[in-house]
Length: 578
Image (cartoon, rainbow, N blue to C red; front, top):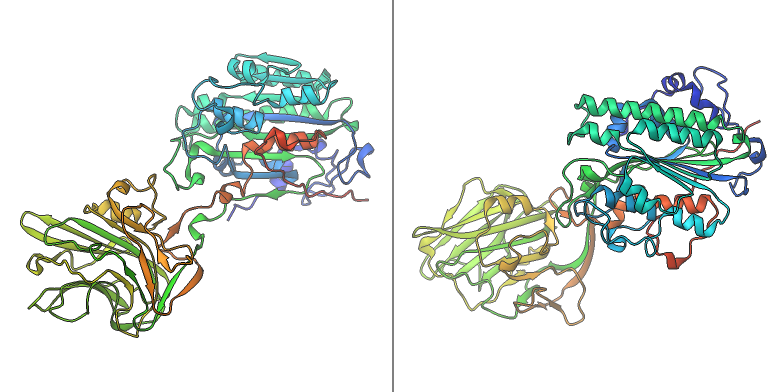
């Protein structure tokens, strides 16, 4: 939950900004700001009066959104009272390493690196004609509109502000602030960009609240923004104008990039504070979704009752011989409740002593892995972790040798069986012509779903089993042993031919036998972390959204041909009060 904010504290510390909040007055020390619209717009509740639609755009390098939330600098915090805002914003929704040129291009063009081509520490590959900045678009669409850009980066100015009416590069943020104030005080620009970089320098690769220099730099920038805002409201023409103020991190700071399927919200280099402010806006905060609580969603066969199963077409699949290293892993949801000894994933003809092969079976609330050989009894390892709870679980078995001794380790949800590895040397060769089967091999006490079955020709290290127990689906990007797959059967799509196909193309399919129902599920399980939908990362403002918001504010129609990647956030308007 976001921290509570003391409204009165914010009113006290930022009295100068109350002018901007709709030429506001404070009627009581314990009341939030009243909203007084500039007179020409008192009846313009839809915000479409041509007014003088103008934009002040303040870019903050290296300032993380979660740090802003934690230290609550007065200006940035107070702005949220009349903003569409987020502390969980993203510089983009990708997993590559992000640089400042990439981040600046995202937020100035509305196009990410896949289109702009800007990926490194410079602007090589950038073309302002094919990826026009907001200055270029405004110049083209609003012939008489003046624009201004003030930055501490010559690269920013030379590439992204090339079509600004007025553009200057300065040595430091103080000079940028002063130039911005001068422009707001006496200039005629309808789009003013101020680019501040000092927080990035102060961080010195430590973007945390414990870094006093970094925090101090943010507070200094916050006061500079306060001065800029005061200059804005003191414009002689302010009452006749309608300003959108955008304040946004370009990117955060810290280790950048992540593996395929990783949570982009955990990438500190992409964490951004983003606010779209206007005195007519009601506050709208966008917080990141809890991706750990995303449901595991799909459709898979449900095996209920005796002899309803999926049978492997190739009887050699699942034969691990007498000395082969191998790993088998799968996800299971057991819906029957606690019962004893029904097999649910089997490579043997029957679950009887002396029948060659292996089988996973239910043992009351838990499960086990059982082996047998001609003339022998059963050799098995039980796990103590319950699976008969109607929740999805991951089960993994690793076959390996140490010297002349062969073992198997059994894991459930990344937790090894407490009894440790099982010595299966004396079981010998466990190959059998009986096919691998998912579901019942005769016992009626089966009610389960099994999917995401993977078989490897290597013994996965314990650390890999533990780290990836929750991961689904397996991909070449998130699975370093992907090339060692003998087969991978996700079993997550309905097929018309009653087959479950190996998507690696290396192995045969399973054939569904008996009465099998394809069953849809959408379950939140503490044991399975499904791939995060890209939509989750667009649930909060991204910097690529900013140009779309600016064009809309300035009444610039955005044709589909521009290919903008941004999203428009509809403001909630605060109607005037008598």
